[in-house]
Length: 165
Image 1 (cartoon, rainbow, N blue to C red):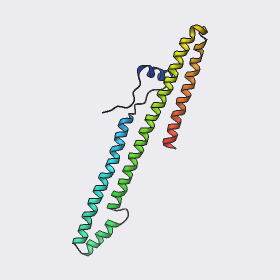
Image 2 (cartoon, rainbow, N blue to C red; image 1 turned 45 degrees about the vertical axis):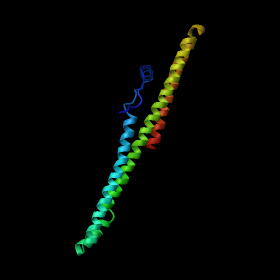
Image 3 (tube, one colour; image 1 turned 180 degrees about the horizontal axis):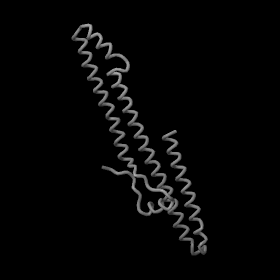
Image 4 (cartoon, one colour; image 1 turned 120 degrees about the horizontal axis):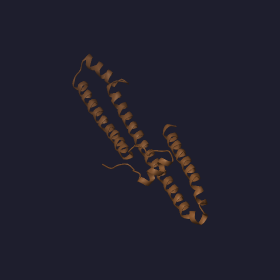
């Protein structure tokens, strides 16, 4: 089975220096689970359809006061068939929410990787320029680390805002 994005060692070190840990959330697994919930909706709809046909055959092949009461109870809102259909809608909604969360995790991971690459390039450039600047270029590293940390905080806040509202 496929696995979600995993950071290389250098990126884990940089992320740790910024005070963060890479999330355990596996966006690929989340997407598979979301799809399973979506598939479950069609199974519930099939069960509801089969139950509806079975119930209809009861009242079309039989006639009695009890059969009429069964038909009324079966068709009533909030009863068996109505509950099955609403459950199918709920299951589909859960699947969509899981898929949205998986997408948010993936996007956030990609954006954090971009920030870490920017930080790594800046550190490499500062170190490379250190001999010519007598070390002054190294002063930029803490500032960039701080700015990248703020950017990651902002990305996390935006993701939470998008998911939670």
